Length: 155
Image (tube, rainbow, N blue to C red):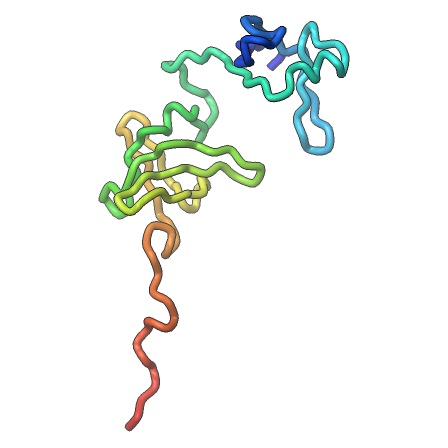
C-alpha cells in the first residue's frame, strides 16, 4: 500500500544502513509485483538495495478484516488438530506462488501442509487451534505396495 514505511536490514557498510524506505507505488509486470520507493529514482540506486530485507512494524494485536485471512504471527504456535487429537504445532508459514504452506512440527518431524480449505477447513485463533483433514500419507507413512498382504490364493 503506498505510504507504507519499511525499515531496512542491510550490512552496516551499506549506504542504506539506519534508513527507511517509503513505498510510492506497487505495479504488476508479468504476474510479478514491482515496488517503487520514494528516493529510489533510477536503476543504479535500486541496485544498491539488492538483498536488503524490508521490515514493517505490525501491531500484533491487529486483526485482518478479510474472511479466512490471518497474519503469519497468528498462525505460528497454533495446535494442529486432526480427528480431535493434537498432532503438532505450526512453526512457520511459507508463501509460495501456488499456495501457502504451513510447517508443522510433529513427534516424528516436520510436515509441510498445503494451506488450502480442503486440508485446513478451520482456524480458531481464540482457541489456539487449526483443524486439518489431510489426505492419507501426509502425516504418516503409507505402506509400500510390496508390504500389502498377498491377494493371490493358492487353493
